[in-house]
Length: 73
Image (cartoon, rainbow, N blue to C red; front, side, top):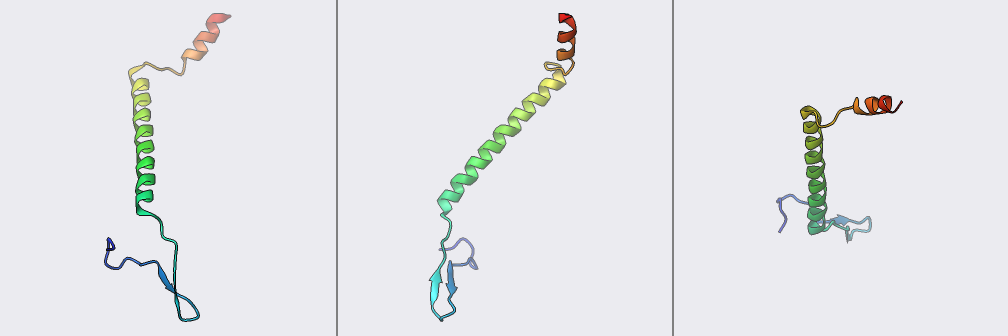
């Protein structure tokens, strides 16, 4: 049973009057791909948030490299 009543069935009319079938995507496969993309997106968002929080707390600094190179001279 289709999820939506007007969902296409994958059939099309051929020029000779018959009907053909199209290759439809596997819903379970699409759900898996969507889950993988959602998981990767969530992981990137959490990592980005942790890095931004680190910069805000002062754990990271962009000036550290310039001070370290000046100390070696």
